[in-house]
Structures are given as C-alpha cells and as structure tokens.
Amino acid sequence: MEENHTQSSVSTQHSALNTQHPVLRSPLSFTGPKAKFFFVNALTLGRIPLILIFLVVNLVLMRQVAGAWVLGGPHSHAFWFAVAFGAMVLSALTDLFDGYFARKFNMVSKLGAYADPMTDKMFYLVAFPTLVFLAGLQRQMPHAALLLGLAVVFLIRDQWVSFLRSIGALHQMDARANWSGKARTVVSFPTICCIYWYLQAPTGWLDLAAWFIYTAEGLSLVINLISIWVYTRYYWPCIRRELRLPVREVSSRE
Image 1 (cartoon, helix red, strand yellow):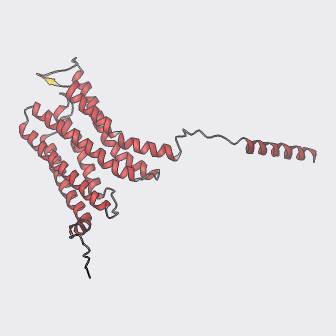
Image 2: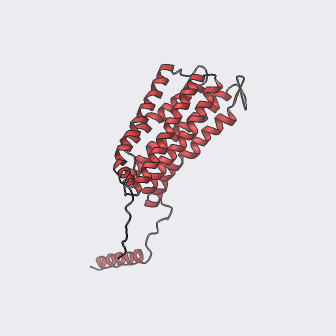
Image 3: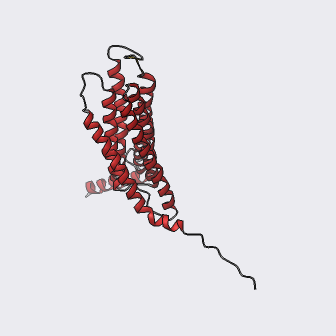
C-alpha cells in the first residue's frame, strides 16, 4: 500500500511539473502550417531566380564567340551548359511540385493561385527570347523565326488569360488554372528544355532529331490555342455581362 501510495505521489508530482512546465515547441518547426505554407510558396517563387540563372549563364558566362566560350577551358562548354540546363529543368519542376505539395499539405491559397501563373510567365519571358537568340547565333534563322512566332503566341495567350481572370474577379470567378492550363505546362516546359538541349548540347551528347523538336513545337502551339479557347469559353458569361450597356437611372422632374 505504501509503495502504491508512493508511486501515486510521484506520478502526481510529475503531472504537476508537466502542467507547470509544458513542453516548448520551436516556432521554427518544419512541420507546422507556417513552415508548410512558406515551403509551398518558396517552390513557386523559386522558379524566378532559377530561370534568371539560366539567362545569365547563356547571355554572359557562356557567350559563344567563334567556337570559343567565355571563361574558357577544355570542359567549359559542358560545365556551363549543365549549369544552365539544370537551372532550367529545376525551374520547370517547381511548377509540378508546388501544386503537389500545396494539395498534400492543404495549403492551396489565393496567393499561390495568382503567383503560379505569374512565375510561369516569367519562365516563358526569359526562356523564349534566349532560345531565339541562341538559334540566331547558330544561323538557324528559319528556326529562330519559328521560335519567335511561338513566343508571340505564348505571350498573347498569357495576356489574354490574365485579362479574362481580371474580368472574372469582378464576378467572383475561380482564378485557378484549369485542365488546359495544366496540359499546356506539361507540354511546354519539357518542350522548351528539349529545344535548349537541341541548340546547345555539347558535341557527343545525346542528339535530338530535328523532326522531334519541330513536332514538339507544333504540339505546344496547338495546346496554347486550345487553352485560349477553353479559358475564353469559361469566362465568356462574365464578358457578356460586361459588354452590356451600363444602366443609368434617369430621374424625371415632376
């Protein structure tokens, strides 16, 4: 009995100590909602510095001059190509994983809904002019012209969808990407990476056939046109409401 009483007393004292001194959890916990929210949005916004690394490497560090490379050396071409290509691929992959983790952590937010298409635009705005520049350096003028036309279609689509979303916001329409936007990303990001590989991969590395690249570019064009139609159809009721003449109250004098 005395032993049981002693154990009970010790247990009571431990409970009292736990109550008086609760276990402190670090505010920097990597499993809390704030950390998850920060992680998801860091993936989304991280697309911007990665694609800027791609730009800087190609226009500054890996500038081609008569077959030589700035910061030259026997392996400089392969090294800077790997840096630029790796930055581009990582930038593209963040678009896949930010949505996955946002849904997994239940951190889908309005910030992410607007930041994701914005960072996609940054990716295209940097990647396409760089590809046009590189194709022109290699005297692939027909291909450079094709890439320029493709870039224009991408930019027109993005501006049109931004306009539609702005109109939809006036009517509380959901601004999240639909299936056509996601399909466009799934097709376009790998296509852009393959184009860069086709243009700049070092000699002896995997050669991508020209027909494959042109087919991928054609598919990207088609999916952009489909996306324009899908978004226009979705927001068309809002456009129709905004096209109506404003109703003005006419006051009559008696």
